[in-house]
Length: 223
Image 1 (cartoon, one colour):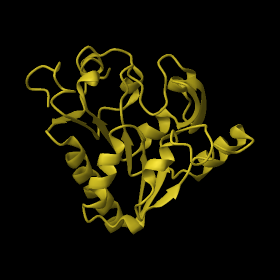
Image 2: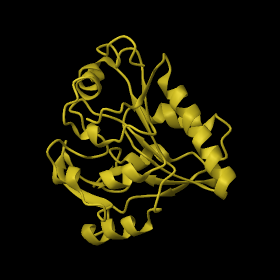
Image 3: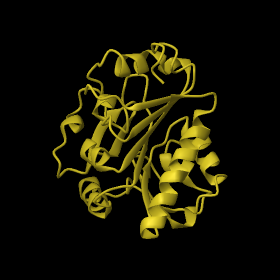
């Protein structure tokens, strides 16, 4: 891991802290260009983040949303991350995971991504994965011109995901991690410096929002 460290914040309501930061970034992008372009992940922490963002007062009608990753399952399947994105006024660009030609669909989604997203929202799994980048998978070494990749049989599903170069190029990265089950992997990532998928998230312009349970194995003074 780089000697530079990301910003780490620890709070009783990290979803609220993350939503406030995301709303601030969205407002700044809208003030500059009239639109904000972000990518968001699914996962257990995302609904709370999105609910708090909806209540933040940010002008979500001028926010375009791309998916960080998606399971390759039918429309309406509860395992789809897309299910979590409904109910807000933002414009969603769903990953085309029901297309018969997934390779072509991934290429089209890549072509439609902005050259530089304003913010990418991520989580971290108990094995250190982020987005749908499994430990040891070739996606971790994606070249700069590969923006969307297909990942086979990861945690029960084939998946489509944006690649590390897209995350690196974003203006900011916001990582939300909660719960005691994540404490060990957070330590291994931020303290031990293990070569986990999450270590591909650049340290600069990245904020990691933790609750006390997820931060339990961090040394005093980090966060």
